[in-house]
Length: 91
Image (cartoon, rainbow, N blue to C red; front, side, top):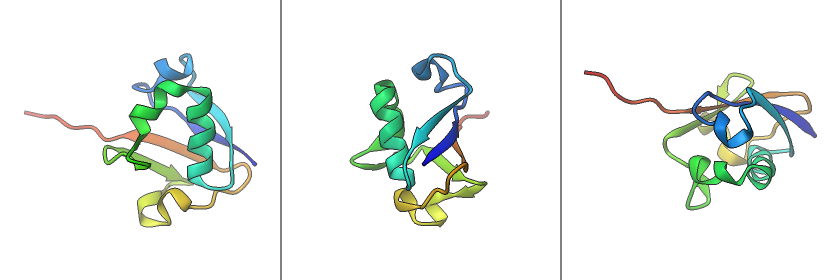
């Protein structure tokens, strides 16, 4: 299955500046593995101890995967997945 993954500006340098890329897989885990295999610089940004890094949010069709099945969340053909690193700061 091929899925479009939207890449936020902070991660674009690791994917050659692309705003979105495609990846293959039936679950979020498979998609991220495909993506990190092709763009190894993303691994340290997306996963920690074999699970989704706590400062990264992943959305499948607008739903946060942490409220679904986490990395085992199924992804249908043609779905849109959004990677969104958590932002912190303020005064």
